[in-house]
Image (cartoon, rainbow, N blue to C red; front, side, top):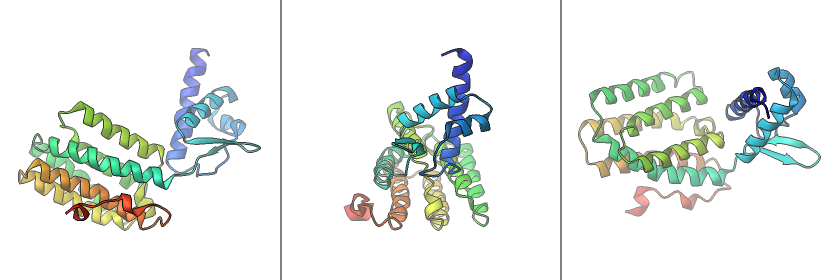
Length: 230
């Protein structure tokens, strides 16, 4: 493959992946190579390479007599991902909190205020992006690179699942914003890292629980709240 083809393949990959993640290409959507190539202004070859990469990532499925289609969202995989992320992101937030200064808290609060302001004219994709920005500020000072790597993998897996929980349960958004403020108050007060970790973990689990209530086919028992453990 020439360098020019590789570049076009990367462009095609980024464009198709973005459309899948943003819900433009919905689950089951048939990916016609010639149509996508024409749309992107490239030949079929780089599009075929892009589709192969997306298949390896689980975003695309090949079906006999159908061809390439956008994979469906696996509720169980989402459940496992959120449960794991609640543990590692909670730990990262607890470790990071004691290293945050007033400027960091102000940045996080500003993002949360933007989230609050967009509740009236709700856009789940924008809200999800702001949500990630908020949490990134909270755990960015975590001194353990291995934990941060696990957190990033969790976020990447959610992106691969095209998961915007707030699209399915928009009512969760307002509670999420309020819980963000509670986390910031704990950090401002210098609460113990373990308390902040538990609050961050419970915040993530609450989002999972909201989703599970809308997905009766999943195993709700895997979502274990702190109250269940007490």
